[in-house]
Image 1 (cartoon, rainbow, N blue to C red):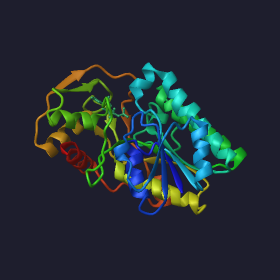
Image 2: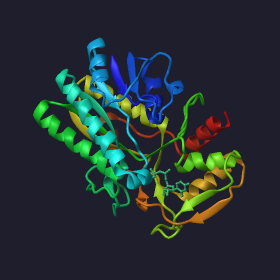
Image 3: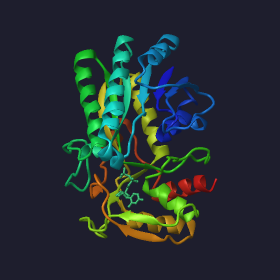
Image 4: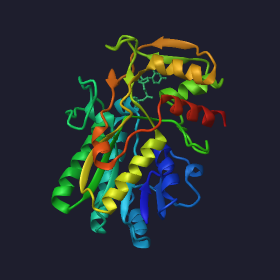
Length: 320
Ligand code: UDP
């Protein structure tokens, strides 16, 4: 049995849908941002908080858990700047409780959702795992703190882990049954598509004076289906002891500016956006693009879906 914490969330629910094909799965999620309907019916669902040691202990007593995959975190850069305590409380303190419970129960295989935000404001064109980490917002900081705990726990308690640093997760499931659904929505692609579907009057571009070719921020968008595949490979590598500890970037290696994303959404939908140019948003670095060569070399993972696949699948989900 595999425990998926945060399996009702955007990325977690896509992974659960994949995992249930071959594994027994129990999902723990407090539904603070996730959705009960997004959890595949083949998984056992438990509503509760990862920081609640009674619930976590009950799960460990009831099921023979072989590995824990942890998606349950707050993940909005701007919110983390406004309310850092919320981020340290959930992303760090509650995660520590989960790790403590794992140690108590001698469960030592862990996959952790981390982020490109751990790199801060890198100056390199392509970020690899050796690029120094230096987060510029509490969200990135909270994820890096857990990465550091994992390193120490590996040394002292034989914790085996894979840290996956996602770049910008986007897209929806091929069935269009699940997709990106945050409330309120703050992410670029769903906001543009909501606007083009007639659910918002306009979209705002946050900052046009960045040091990039068109002045808007560049990101590396990675399909949630590609992310799910990477998690499965990481899990199998941990279960078979092929790897003991590893940190991998998950990105496409292609950067797109905010303006380019708007144009691509217009192309896919055949609709024209009403674009407002606004001030920079706090905590946003100018450019984040991955070099994901390490996970290709070690686990054979490579992104297979591109920006058109991402936006087409997200549009299919939005229309539904
Ligand atoms: N962005 C924007 N308008 C929006 C939402 C986002 O211009 O309504 C920009 C944002 O400033 C960033 C990029 O789009 O440069 C991606 O933002 P998102 O929130 O999707 O992901 P993040 O990179 O913050 O994880």
